Amino acid sequence: MEFSETVQQRHSIKSYQPDKEISDAELKELMQEVVLSPSSFNLQHWTFISVRDTEIKGKIKDAAWGQEQVGTCSVLLVICGKLNAHEDAADIYQGVDQGIQDKVLPLIKGFYDGKDQLQRDESIRSASLAAMTLMLAAQNRGWATVPMIGFDPEAVSQLVNLKSNFIPVMLMAIGFKKEEPRPRSYRRPIEEVVKINTLDGPGLMG
Ligand SMILES: Cc1cc2nc3c(=O)[nH]c(=O)nc-3n(C[C@H](O)[C@H](O)[C@H](O)COP(=O)(O)O)c2cc1C
Image (cartoon, rainbow, N blue to C red; front, side, top):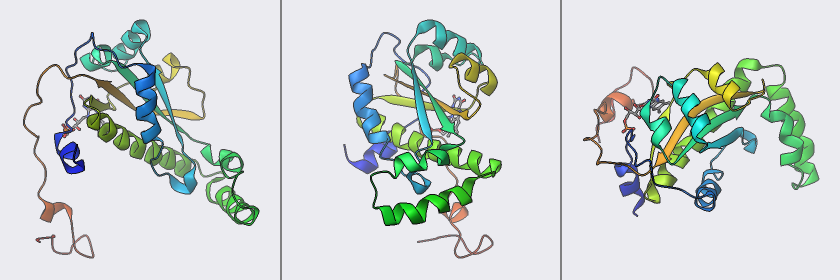
């Protein structure tokens, strides 16, 4: 599929064929593309919890305003962000040239240590970029997705046993759509969303 076609055909799909399966092998192939997403210092703050278990899905659905797609998708991913991902830097950089490690590891520590807001922002940024890759890579395979923040984070954290150093950034339903999506929802015009040089500059006209 042409890349721009993939982008244009992606919609948030809320109605799924509940009997359709996506195997672990297929999910793994998808995730091998997803983990190619960028992250600051390559810290890869993301962890994905794959939920197919009907009972757990049902409980997550209850914690997600009863959203139907949580129950009917082929697989539900709880996309988590690791708040203290910077503490994994030594592991991540172990194969890297010693000179680079000596420079980068103290830099990472100084940048993140004790900065709770930054750690949270970063885990959300990285997990969100991975989520976008996931939606497009899934679309490219003929699967549909919908990202969700409509859920109780504490309840979902408990249901999937998150420790306090993880946050549930987003839920992602993946499956086979039941019907064609509605026409694309309104998008603000480019001249309104792209400004030249400063926020109060002119809009991009092209
Ligand atoms: C961070 C985020 C959270 C969202 N949460 C929900 C949600 O809880 N439930 C839902 O049905 N759609 C959710 N959506 C989907 C949006 O409603 C959808 O992306 C938007 O209306 C644009 O439609 P499109 O994705 O089909 O282009 C969410 C999207 C994003 C990016």
